[in-house]
Length: 313
Image: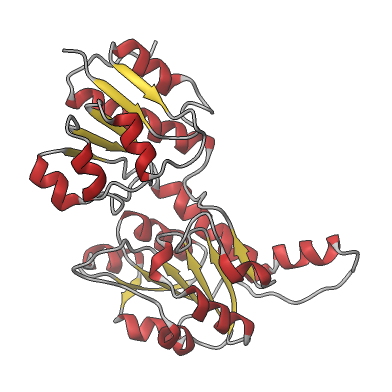
C-alpha cells in the first residue's frame, strides 16, 4: 500500500531541488505546505488527517493533534529539537520519531559566534547610528581573553566551546552529564551553573526544554550576571524571562543580548525597542547548505522507515 506523507516545511526545496526529487522518485504520495506559513494545530490536522508520515518543522504536535492523526506512523523532524512533539503520546502510539542532529551543529555554532562578535564590536549599533546620519564611535571589546560560559554541552554546545577556545577565550561549561575527557582535552573548565552565571563575560545557552530537568534564566539569574556581560541564546526562547531581560538590558546591568529564539514566535516583544540587542527570526540553522542537507536527511529518514527507494537522480 502506498504511503502518504505531509511536508510541513514552508521553504521545502527552495534552495535545492534534491529533497523534492528524492520524494518524487520514491513513489510515495505527498502533500506540500502551500500555505507558506508555520502550520497551526487545525492546519496540521486538516492536511495530514490521512497521512502515514510527516516531515516536520517546529510546529506543535501535542496529544490533541496526535490523537486526531489516526494513520500517523512516523514523524521525521527536519532539525534537531523534538520538544514540539509529545513524546509520551508518540511512544504510546508507537509512532517513530527521527531528527537530523548533526547537520545543525556548525550553522548554530557559527550563528552564536556571529552574534557574539556583533555585540562585542557593536556592529549593529554602529550600523544603526550611521544610518541615522550620525558619525559616532563607541569602543567595543575583544573576544580574546574573555570568559565565556556555555550552558549545555551537547553536540552544539561542544562545538561552540571548541570555536571559542580556538579564538583564545577562556571557556567554562555546565552540563547535566559532562564529557570530562572532552573538557580536559579542549581545556574547558566544568563548573556549577551558579558559578558560571556570576563570573563570565559572555553567557551562551545551548539547552533544550526538559520537564524532568527544567532550566530557566529569570530576573534573579540575570542580575547575578556580571555587570556589562553579554547573553546569547540560540537554543529555546522559553528558557529566558524576556521581561526581566528587557529590564536588565534597559538598566545597563547587561551590556547586550543576542537572541535568535523567543518565547512566542513570531514575536520579539519589548526587546525590539532596545539598541543593545541583536535579534533574528529563528534562523540559526538557516543556511542554504545546511537547510538542504537537513531536508535531504529528513526525507531519507522517513523513506527508510517506510522502506521506500531513495533515488537522488
